[in-house]
Each structure stands twice: as structure tokens, then as C-alpha cells.
Length: 193
Length: 193
DNA sequence: TTTTTACATGAGCAAATGCTCATGTAAAAA
DNA sequence: TTTTTACATGAGCATTTGCTCATGTAAAAA
Image 1 (spheres, rainbow over the protein chains, first blue to last red):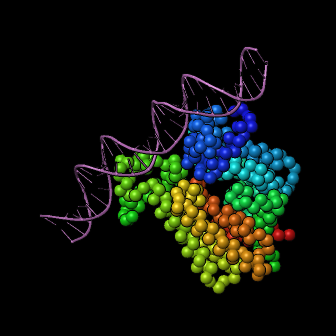
Image 2 (image 1 turned 90 degrees about the vertical axis):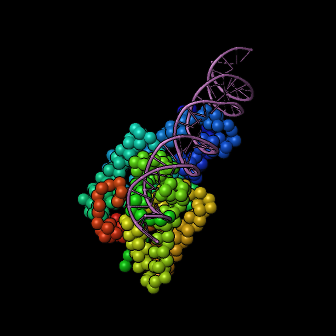
Image 3 (image 1 turned 90 degrees about the horizontal axis):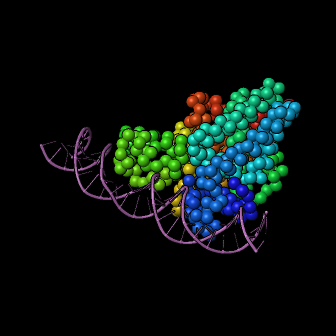
């Protein structure tokens, strides 16, 4: 749909509502109330509640896919590739925290056939990450054994980040967050003895 | 509410439904259909849809709180305490994957005042974990700086586990999973040089 | 045997929910 | 200036949803 200042404000308000209450629990009447307008006016901004979800979900997902594809195409070592993937993940999350929250929390509310499409694309992303890890193991850079478990664990480590930016008011330094998460993933929490 | 064989089956079916579609999206009619019975019969098993959610959520949350309290009371070192917390987390998750999925995905659907109560108890759990980490830093066992970020990251690392048990059919060895996650959290993925 | 308990049905209500339509106005584009 | 576009209203319709009630039956407890 088209863009404008008012539409931007509308979308910001709605994203906030959905993040707080959940997609299903956020009714069109809730949106109208938050915007101080009538229900019917909401439909000047969206085609349907479902399409709103779809647009956002595939939009953010695309950002992640584009990022990992570019990195996969590069000639960095697996270790460096992984660092770039993590970095891009954090950048996208901190730049679009509400959209990322939507991605993590609300994808189940997609309807077929878009749901299947979404899951396939997510699996595609995960496979690419696993590929990097497998190469890293081959190069002797990573000491892990199970690349699937490792990929899932790394993603889980990153997936909560949007909350940091949203729930707490502590707007921390993105560079500092990136460094700490990178340290955690690569060397853990134990002091070396 | 009372227990029985039939009720056990009922709850299992409903938990599966909610895990697949989400709490809000799972209607009482969905439950009835899955059970091949009439809608009204569902209310022989539950008082209301809300109370079902509440009971499960506080029930699982309690398991986690009881576990961390026992560990906090012990005289293990911070490093060992943290290992026990992680271990207990994994045990509970693998023993009750559906309930854990509910805890992670559906707590937003609680209504006040139970929602606030739930969040307070979760914060209590997180604070206890932070306390262990702070002590570990003091003892020179952990090299991290920010105990809040570290606590959140560790929890995130564990929070996805229920999917491993539910979505994929690969029923892996719990001991092996625990070892790999423990390694990840304490020493990361990089091979030491 | 009687009585209580657990499980089951079907009709149906009140509220909530997503969405449409006909209509109107203020601002921007032509 | 005219016309199109973006934003707004209010009435209201068709479904969906959570839940109740009156009633019934099979099994377990008394």
C-alpha cells in the first residue's frame, strides 16, 4: 500500500499495540481507539488485518535473507562469515525491533498458503547458517559437533534482543551489545584458566 | 480441577492444539472437534479457557522457581550453581515441552491481575539468575561484565529447546543436549588456539 | 440396590470481531 | 479552478466465539 506521514504514524501505533497484546488479541477496534478514530477509518490504511501481518512478516524476513545471501557469496572464512551474519542480525533487530518482535512472536498467525511459504524461507535461512557452521568445523575453526543444534542455539541467543530495545528503557550502545553477544557466542562466559 | 484418565487425554490434545495454532487462535470448538465431542462437553474438563491457561502457566513457572530456589540455598560455587540452574532448566523443558512452549509463547494472553503476577515472578527468577552471575564475576569465574545481559542471553539460549523436542521428530539424548548447551554457554563455539 | 460421580449431548444466547458501504471533507495535484 | 487523492465518519451486517442450561447415561461408590 501507499505511504504517507499519517500512514507511518498509523503503522507505528499498530505495531506497538500488537507487540503489547499479541496479534490475535489486538482487534481492529483497539487500533481505532488508540488512534482516536472510527473503526472504518482503519481500512484506509490496510486492506485487512491478515494482509498487514503478511506484509510486515515477509518484509523483515527478506531483510535477513538478503543479508545472509550477501555474506554467503563473499570470500570470508567461515569464522568471519558467521561474525557478519551475527552482526547483520543484530543490526536489523536494533533498527526494526517491533518488526523483529512480530517475526518472532506472530508468524504462527499467518494463514495458508503464506504460512508454509514463510516456514520454508525460515528453514532456508537456517540451512545457510548451518552451512557456514559446517564449513567452520571443517576448517577447524569451531569445536562444536552438531551444526543444527549450534545454528538453533546461536539464533536463540539473538532472537530475544528486540526486547532489550523495547521492554526496558535502557537504550544501550549497539556496538557494545554486539561485542558482548559476539564474545558470548564465540568464547562463552567462563574465564579461561 | 480433578484428575482422571480421560482428563489427561483431554489436556494432552488441547496442549497440542494450542502449541500448533496459538492460544487465542485455538477455539473451544477446535478442542471439541479434535476430541470428537460436543462443545459443551469441553466444560466438563475446564472452568474456562482463561483458567486453563492460568493453571498451566503458573504450574510450570513454579517448577522453575522451586528449582532455582533450591540451588540458591545450596553451598555450591557460582559456577556450579549456574550449571545446576541450566541443568534443571533443561530437565524441566524436556520433561514438559508443551507446557514450556505455553510458558514461552502464550503468557501475554493472561489477563490482569494474573498477568502482572506472572511477570513479577518471572522477574524474580531472572534476578536470582543475575545474582548467581554477579557472584561468579566476583569470584573471578565468569569473564562477562553485564550480568543482566548475560542472564537474558543464557535464558534465550535455553528457551527454544522445547521446539527441538516438539517440531522435529529427532528425539535426541537429553544428556547429550545438556552437555552441548553447557559447553556452548561456558566456552562458546571457537576452538581454542 | 441406590446414589453419586464422571462424561456426554444439543439448543442457543450475548458479546466480540472483521469488514463493508454510502457519504463527507480537507488538502494536494491537474 | 477543477479534480483527484488521502483521510474521516457512522450505521450495520455476517460470523465467530466463549459459555450456559436442561437433560441424559454409564460406571463407580455407598
